[in-house]
Image 1 (cartoon, one colour):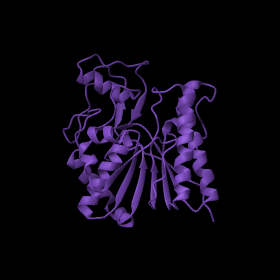
Image 2 (cartoon, rainbow, N blue to C red):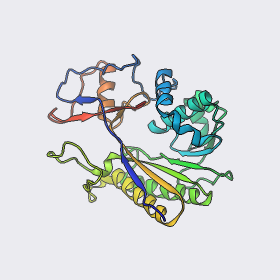
Image 3 (tube, one colour):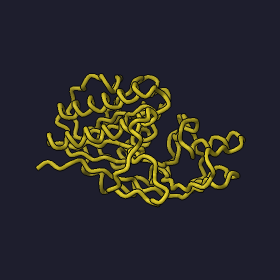
Length: 287
């Protein structure tokens, strides 16, 4: 019996008030500076924190192959560094094939990952990459262009075509489990009278607004995963990730807390777009 893909609304922590314009960089528990576009490895304390809390889960992946799209993004970088660390510490013997548009640039940007024996880089576009001939147990589809990098039509087409290609690859290679990293953008604007968004919430973005292309791309991709779940033996999981903070978070894109931290680090006035009353909770990446 085929089960529909399940979605997980990633819990958000660390409340951050936007009502104080004199906020500086939030104090991090590990006394590290949040940075963007940096080649530095993640703090060992964070990687050990992840290992401690996920140790029972890794035995299932022992000796398995993982295919990952979007390895150069915020989530991809955290996933890869966590995987490499746990692989070394637990002697798992697992391997990861990472799809990248520019494998050389990836290796130059993150040399500590580029030289990892368990990580193989596969150069290609997510919409048209050649399927590697190896068999894989797991696929993690985390590739997605930023909403500010492309025009709406191009953005939407890239997300849908990319998801279709990765799903086709998973089916062709007999993948057992497939994780799609979605986004809280699928919920649209949160109503003022709703303090928390429950899983059964059926709100959504304005589908007639071209600026909703990213959110709609994620929604359609979720639907595609659900359709594949009914028509194949692949077990799907969907993680709706949003409101994260930590190393590798871009400070110059459309992430509010990244913009705040970027302003503070550069000695600029912290710019707040709005009346300063919204309250949002953030989850530190290692958690």
